[in-house]
Amino acid sequence: PQRSLVLVKPDGVARGLTGEILRRIEAKGYRLVALELRVATRELLEEHYAEHAGKPFFEPLVEFMSSGPVVAAVIEGHQVIPGFRSLAGATDPTAAAPGTIRGDLGRDWGLRVAQNLVHGSDAPESAAREIALWFPGL
Ligand code: GTP
Ligand code: MG
Image 1 (cartoon, rainbow, N blue to C red):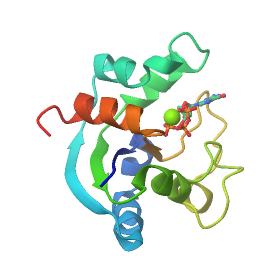
Image 2: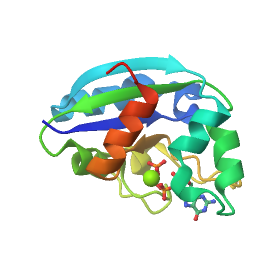
Image 3: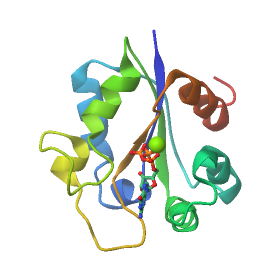
Image 4: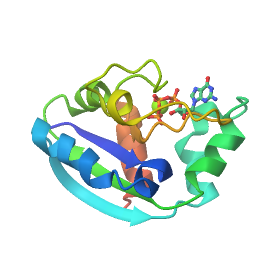
């Protein structure tokens, strides 16, 4: 079955939403295959977000993502990559539909980078790359 890398971002962990987010993933029927709380290094995040290098939000994004602990998870299930993107909702939490993680639990705080609670891999190739990066032993 397909696997996806999910991150509960520092805003989600700081707000105590880790349990609620993992609950939604498990309630949907996806299986947790790896789970860890950790503070990501700049190096890891620059690799993780390599596709955004050079964009104006890159620096604030790396800073935000390293500002506190994240919960990294690998989740598994048929079509889990698009399935989790659908659970997460649109990138901009103001636009994200109610019923989604970002739509129900997120908002715009007027900061330099959108704090949108979760990350999920966007394609099989990025999932493979991100899982190898965050969980090299897996
Ligand atoms: P991730 O799951 O975190 O990868 O989010 P995404 O796939 O919905 O968005 P994307 O990969 O395009 O961007 C990564 C992160 O950068 C987003 O989650 C936002 O936090 C931030 N971001 C993306 N686009 C913009 C933008 O246009 N402006 C600002 N300020 N932040 C952005
Ligand atoms: Mg993305």
